[in-house]
Structures are given as structure tokens and as C-alpha cells.
Length: 608
Image (cartoon, rainbow, N blue to C red):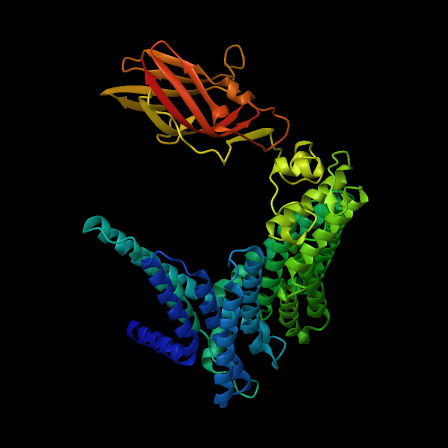
């Protein structure tokens, strides 16, 4: 077959996909158009775009349901498309009063797309033989990676052309690059993906040539799975089991960092099992025979470890999903080993558990929020800190109870459910307010090296801000220079160095921020611990040397992230020198244990 025939065949496949999945094609093109219009208007209509993509994804699901179960019944097909539209509109109404990237809405949206994806994968295997789901899995994996590769090459090529034109011929509007991205990834990618979808057999039909070709595992992929991925997974499994056995009496049950490691391992394991299910060689047969049993063991240990963490510091949505995934993996391992002919039940179980995780009232965030709120209330009550629905501060309670209070508060704040806990004085507490409310710092457990704390050591620090009720105004009648400045890590942000040129009456002065806090002298190993603001004239002669070390002592460094405020006049400091008077008015100052300082302030110079 020559290039012309291949190109013609590919265009025919795309045309057939557009005709076959016309509803989804229209949705994806509409989403592309909305993205491009939003780019032109410098708007990002994420809710509308998300719901249009949802409609397109549901359109694929509707078309497959029609083809597999209701052929020749156009009324059902149109009903399914109307249902997809109504569901997408309804979901938009749900998102409209919420932020898409608000925690619970974001999780629900992500899981919803996952459910649609797994359902699309699952449908062709219903009423089929035991290997139908594995064949369907291969079809979609091949289609995804092929579409992704083609789209990536197209995207890089178009970007290279635009960049060359912009560099060599004439400049082009930067928005063109965004339009190319939208056309490639929102338009071309899903349509090309659909063009690689064969017509799936219904059980009554003999599979056609396109389906047989789509379900064939390429030789390269077969070699990759057999001789690379399977041995790597086997070695990785051995390392995991050795770690679990070595730490089974201690660290394993408290190490939260292992959760994503183990979950990733299980996901990759199931991906590999579904991919090799139709292959036949000695390595694959051994892997199919023993790996599900190892998955059963590893996920069992993970489940016990997760339950132990829940007992210690409560349930979170992450641990909720881990428990569901552990349940799925354990049951699926049993099905794979004992009832392989019922393989189609495995994706069905995953869909069921996913639906439960976002169903209102029993969804992950709602259940976890109730659990954390109950844990917070129970811990406070057990320590006599909750009286008449008001919190009584007590910094002497046991460390494990402090840990529970901090974990519960942090989780409720992260998922924006603090307002549901009526005994908290306000929805958000900074560290200073947290200390006043509970009697200890939210960071104190980290500072004391509390076992099981996963966050790094946090040094003592304070933030000092000007009173927000103060009006920012300066008497500049006697001032020659007024500059707003920001210093971070010893550098002025305007120039990213510690030297800032100032021009006054055609003379150039150098303002130097000399920060040696915590530095060591090489020869005598003596700590300098100096903080100075220096002003030099054009000849390098020093006009002023203002010692600012007192800034680090404006408040006591007792805990991490202490927050204070003072009237602006108490944060204004003046120093006179023979040739100039320097006035500094600080609006914000952050000081961290004698080795780090940032400052927002106004500099006023009055030359004599």
C-alpha cells in the first residue's frame, strides 16, 4: 500500500469517525471554539469547557451503548444523546455556584470523568468471552498512545513553523500559540482517537478485520511487556516484600510516604495484567499465575496500614480512596485467580466503587469531613477543652491528642469545611490565633520532632505587619526621595541584587543592603550576624551606614509563623547622618531565626 492509499484510508477513517460519533465530535469542536474565544477575550471558562468535554465523553458512551445493545433503534440513540446533554447541563448547574478547583468539586469532577472512561472500556466486554475486556483495553490503549503521538508531532511541527516565522519573517500575536494548542489537543486529538475505534462485535457477529487489527498487540509492545515490564515489576515486588518484612513491627504501619508508592505499584500491576491477558509465553503464564496472589498480599498489608493510620489520626478522603482501592484490588485478585471467566466483573466493581465515592452524603470528602469533625470534637471533649460549645486553650495535653487536633483542623481547612464546625471561633485561624484558641502552635509538633510527622522541621519565625486599619500616608514635605522597596534573601526585588542605584539631581547613589545574618567568617569561624543599609555616593564614599539588626528583635522568636501587627508609626524608624537622614516605614516584615529576613517598606531620604 503506497502513501497515497494510506493517507486516503486514514482520511476515510476520520470521516467515518466524525459520522459515527457526530455528537461527540461536535462537542469537542465546540469546546475548542470556546477555548479559542476565551483566549481572545482573555477569559478562561473552565466550568463551561469541562461540561462540554463531559458531554462529548458521554456521547462516546451513548454511541457504544446504542451500537452494542440497541442497534437500529434510533429513538434509543437520540434518547441517550438527550440524556448526555441533560446530565452535562445539570452538572454545570452544580458547578456554577462552586469553584471548579474547589476541593470537593475538583475531586467529584475527576472521578466522574474516570467513571465514564472505565465504563467506555467495560461496555464492549459485556456478554462476551473472558478475554473481551483485555481486548477492549488493548484497543483503547493503542488508540490513546497513537493519537497522542500523532498530536504531539503535529503540535511540535506547528509550533516550530510559527516560531520560525515569528523569528525570521515578522512577529505574530502570542495568542496564535494558544489557538494551535486548542486545535491540536481539544480538536484533533479526540477526533483522531475516535477514528481508531473499531466497531465492537455484539456476540452475534463475527469480528471484522478492523476490530481484529485493533486488538492485536504489536510485537514491540509484546517484547516490552514480556522482557522489560514484567521483570521490573517482579524485582520491585521483591523489594517491597523485603521492606514490609523488615519493618512489619514498626515503621511500615506509620509511613504515609509509602501510600502513593504502593498504590502506584498496584495500578501498574493491574495495567500489566490486562495488557498481557491475551499473550501466551512462559514468562507471561508465570506472571499471570503468581502476580495476582502477590497483589492480594501487598494490598492486604496496605489496607491494614491505612486502617492503622485512620485509628491514629482519622479518616481523610485520600485514605477513603485507598480503602476502596484496596477492596477493589483484593476482590479483583480473587476473581482473576479463581473465576477468570468472570473478568468482566472487575471493571464493573471499579465503576460501582467509584460511583459510591462521589455519591452525595457518602462521598469521600463528606465522609472524611464528618470523621475529622467528630475526631476534633471527641479529642477536645476528652481533654476538657470543649465547654459550652467553646474551646478552652490547653497546651499541656498529650502529644498524640495535639496531633489529632492539628490533623483534623488542617484537613477541614483544606477541604473548606471549617464552617461546619460550630465551636470554632472563625473559619480560618492563623498560627497566632491557633495558639490562642488551642494553647499550642499548629507547627509545634514538627518543631519538637513528633514521631510520625511527615513535614520538615520548621524554624521559629514571626511576621510583623502594619495595622490594616492604618491609612498609608507620609509627610514628604522635607523628603527628597521616596521609594517603595521589597527585599528578599538580601536582594532588592527591583534589580535582584543587593545594590540599587538611586538618581537624585543628576547624581547616582548606591543603596546597599548588607545582610550577613548567620554567616560564618572563613578564617576564625566567627558569626557576623549583621544587617545594614548603606548609602554611597558616586565616588563610593559612604554617606550612611544604618544598622538594622534591631529588626530581628522587634518580637520574640518563640514559635513558628507567629503573626503580629502594629500601628504604622511604630514601624517607622529614622536615623540621621551628617549628609543624609534615612526614614524607613515597614508595612510587612518576616524574620526567621537570625538567618532569613524579607521586608516590604518605604525608603525616604532627606539630603542635608
